[in-house]
Length: 416
Image 1 (cartoon, rainbow, N blue to C red):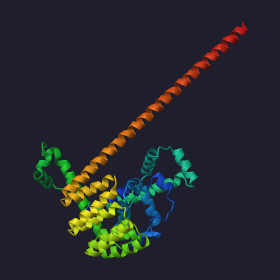
Image 2: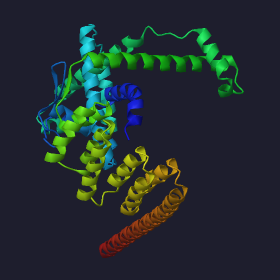
Image 3: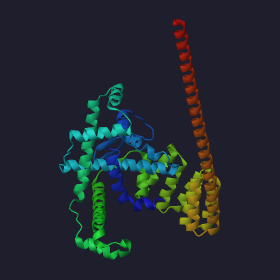
Image 4: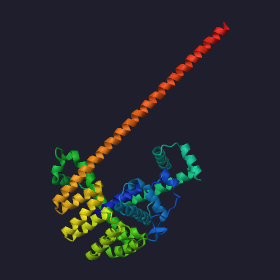
C-alpha cells in the first residue's frame, strides 16, 4: 500500500516544492480575502508543525489546504490523509528553503512591474476590474496598497526560494560527450532523426534530470539535518508509517483509534503492525475494523492484501469477495479488486471483476448519454423560449408602431 509512495519520495520533494512556489506562495485574491479566517477542524494544536523552532501554524496550514481545495474535492477516504501530509510537507520544505536562503544570504529581486503584472493576472483570472477589486478590499477593511504589499512579499519569498533551489544545482553541466553517448545508447528512441536535430533536446533533458537528482539529494540532506516536529497525531502517524518508523506509527495510531476511530485509522494501525512484522496483531486489528465498519469495502480489500502478503491465498480471496460484495457499483473499487486478483493469479475472480467493470462502465455511459440528451433538450427548450420571447417582443413593437401611426393619422385628420 505504501511502497510506491516511498519509492517516489525523492521525485515528489521537487515537484511539491515547485508546485507550492506557484500555488501556495503566490496569494491569489480569494486567498488574500480569506487570510484571516481560522478553523480548528482536522488539527489538534494551534501549531501543527515546527521546523528548526520556526512554527507552521494551524491557520497557515488550513489556508494552504484551501488553496489546494480543487485537487482534494474528488479524493477517497484513503487518499485524504496522504494529500494532507503532502501539503504539510510542502510547507515544511518551503520553510527549510527559506531558512537556507537566509543562511546563504540570498536576496529577492522584485520590481513594481512584477507586482503589477501579477495583480493583472489575478484580475484576469477572477474576471474583475481594478475598481471592483478596490471595493471588495475596502469591504474587508483593506486597501489596494495593502494588497500590493502582500503580493510583493509573496513574490519576494518565492524569488528567494527559486534562487535557493537553483543554487543547489547550478554547478551541474552536461558535456557534448554525454549528449552523444545518450544518443548512441538510445538510438531506437531517436529513430528517423539525426544527432544535430535532437542534440539540444537531449542536452536539456539530461541537464534537467541531473539537476532534479542533485536538488532532491540536497533537499533530503537538509531535511535529515533539520529538527522537524509534526504535532497533528494523524499526520505524525502517517508520516512515520510512510518512512517505515513503525514503532512511532503504532503508538500514534493506537491513541488515534481510541480517541477518534475510523476505518482509515484502523487500517493505518494494521499496516504499521504488518510493517513491524507483527502480522498476528495486524490481523486482529483488521478483524476489529471489519466488526466496527462492516460496510466499508476498503477495509476488506486491505485485509485481503495483508493475507496475500502472508501467502494465505484462501483467506485473501475470502476478504476480496466480501470487498466486492460491499463495493456496489464503485468502479475504482472493482478495478482495484481486478488488479489484486490478477496479481495473485486468480483468473476466474479477475474475469468476474472485469465483467462487473464492463457493466458499470456501460451503465455510466448510458447515464452520461441520458444526461447529455436532457441537457440538449433543455437547451432546445431554452432556445425555443428565447425565440418565442423574441417574437412576442417583435409583435409588441409592431403593435406599438401601428398604434403610434394610427394616433398620428388621427391627429393629422383632426388638424385638417
